[in-house]
Figure 1 (cartoon, rainbow, N blue to C red):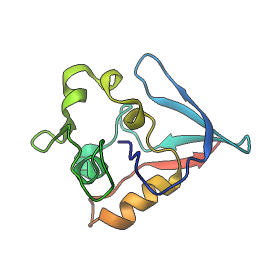
Figure 2: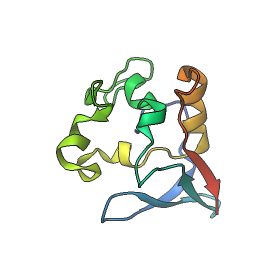
Figure 3: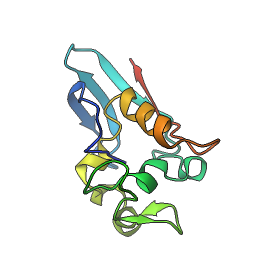
Figure 4: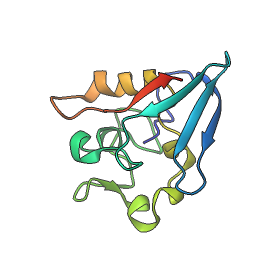
Length: 125
C-alpha cells in the first residue's frame, strides 16, 4: 500500500506498470539505475504473512500513524477497493508503493512485530 505522507523522498524518475494487472515492472531512479520490487506472491503482497501491515497502520488520506487505511477490511486483510475490482481500482499511490527500500524500512521500523512485517524488497537490476 502506498504511504503518500511518508517521510521518504521519492527516489525514482519513472515507474513502469503492467496494464494487465497494474503490477510494478520496474522503478527507474533519477540516477538512471533500474530497480524492481521482489517478494510478491502471485503478483500480490503476501498479506497472509504481513497482515497488511502498511494498510493496517497508515491511512490513504492522512498522516502516517493515523491508520488504518480508510479502505482496509480487517476481517479479510484486504482493501475494500481491491476486493471489489482487483488491483486496477486501487489508487495510484497504493499501486506504486513501495517507491524505495526506505518506504519498506520505515514501515518495518515503526510497526513490525515478529512475523508481522513487510516482506517486500526493492533491488537494483
